[in-house]
Image 1 (tube, rainbow, N blue to C red):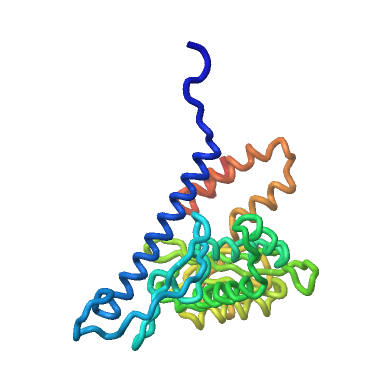
Image 2: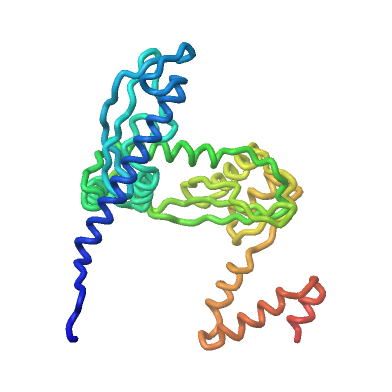
Length: 290
């Protein structure tokens, strides 16, 4: 017997499955909301119980966007109590995954107007500029809380560097210097302990950065590693007089590679790594002579 005996309409099956999943999500969320209301009232619906704390007063509907699609929630209304759901935060219209995507798009440099267009394409509804702004404010508050946290560990080794990023300011893009510090704990774990914007990598910017780190509790610093930036080197001795400074090997390698023939870069890199792999200074000097 030739030909296909059974033919499947894959698009139809996909749509049907999507509808089933969406209906299941909607039914589950509404059941959880009703269960929350029963727990607050301390009595099931229509039950006559003297221990009840309030009464049901119907429902009101609201839209809620999920990964399975838009669903309709039937939020219980109560008399004598305020219904605050732990499952669906009040006034929240989207899942956290959607909110995170909006914030990531904005932080990646996507314009506000473009974000609105993308959300309409992806989720079938346009997110207002005000909503995106509110999400960003919430995100920035969390970032600032993390950035200004107290440093309770001791960090014997601290790596510092300045990186330049593009920043949109007044409709134009400009370079912004971001000073970064990565601390190594006494147990050998690395942790980003500080980031701050500096107008440029000058002495004043680095000094303010180190003073800020110290005010947050940076202590026990024995060695600070960075590039050979004069402003950085001068500030280290002033703010952390007991800490020694060491030039970053990566920056040193780059300077060396810039003055050696390109065909010998790999060979020179192996020689430098062999020298720095020695256990002590004397062995490293001996290796450099060989």
